[in-house]
Length: 306
Image (cartoon, rainbow, N blue to C red; front, side):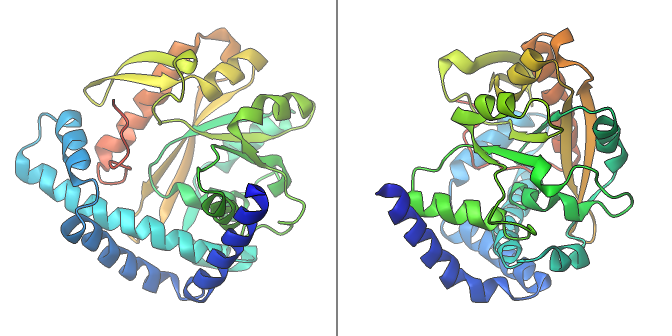
């Protein structure tokens, strides 16, 4: 019953938001900055959490510097939400490609693994706009991506609200050519079964990997990340190691024009040659490098350290 109710609720939400999603991207970004200022200055949404996270992550920065990061972060947060609404209105790849909202810098790395007949595991974070991930194929401008949309999978955790879970899931699939038959949105609890079932196919599995561990059994101590002792879920690293697959880091940084640069770096050509802790330490080192370059371009409202 909850699935049926969630589908109805999600469909109603999409219907209400649909008119706004058709507005130009520039309008969404302007609205997003205003929404962000409202969240940070008026609603003060998780402002204490943000300031504590920033102060502990950057102990070398002065109070004025932290305040400037906080202000820009909230504008970015509002923009992420409004860009996601715009993304949901891209009901075909053409609108997404024309926008250049994101561009993959080194598609050749992904294509090399495809040519070698390998699946790849990709770890990414709450940097840039993680809600745009469903448009990967449309972001390969310099060199077409050999992984097709049916080969690109996103592993996610089901939301508590069935309506929002359905809405977000459909929104993320909006620009796909064949949304009806797409099976690449995989709930985390069934990810390993899905991967084993498709082991002989070339797939790209995307895992968001900067959240606090869901359970103590999946918890790995990765040492220091952003000046703080950090625990991580094992997830993608453990599965890549178990299946001896390549493991990649995906970075998503913001360009001066407001669009995103996506790039990939290899964490391990064969993850089975390293421990889970070694793989995760490499991932967090790469992520910290990106965050220090653009500290406002990260989700500081989530309780990463508990």
